[in-house]
Image (cartoon, rainbow, N blue to C red):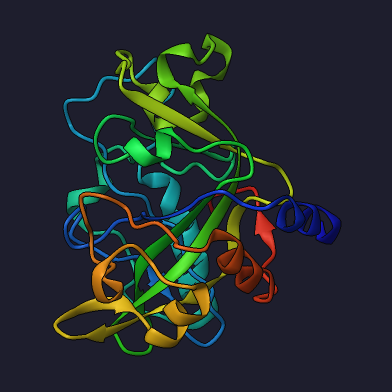
Length: 255
């Protein structure tokens, strides 16, 4: 894996984009838990639109989160940790799907820059997680990363592979949607999150020391609350070098 990382760094990365994922106040009205001491967290995706129709047997419900939440609660002695009623009966928009190393987006709007990524570019995923120690504060942290293998149009995904991403599980596919596939061994969910944020100037933002080490982002003052256009890293190679120093283990599973 270290050889693979060195190869990527030496090859020179072209682009890197920071993408917010996971249930939050705006999408689902809840935040997944994190233990800020160990960095262990539960990945809980946003809910899918109620109007979406799925291919038979391809929907993912929030009941899949019950077991990971229970295990987490027992391990860290957290009482009352359960999904809110408004989520329990809904389907998840399981995206990214770390089991298949896929991420889907609308390639003409929010995901326009994502649709133009190429091999060895990066998608870095972050989430706003609820601390089990201080429930009043959110932990904004990186939770996953893809080194891009390919970006394909959703309508071009073969029937045999449509189950691999939320944007291809629907009965009706959008001609505008794209699916990013991550490279094995150098992509996945993190074994622990990497905190990057703080509350500053009336919003959650990337800490100044972190953004400086990364070489900057294409957003004003490190703003990382949900935005219409995901920010880019100004220096993708510099960010990736920083990331390699974090000692993260990749998991090819959602929880």
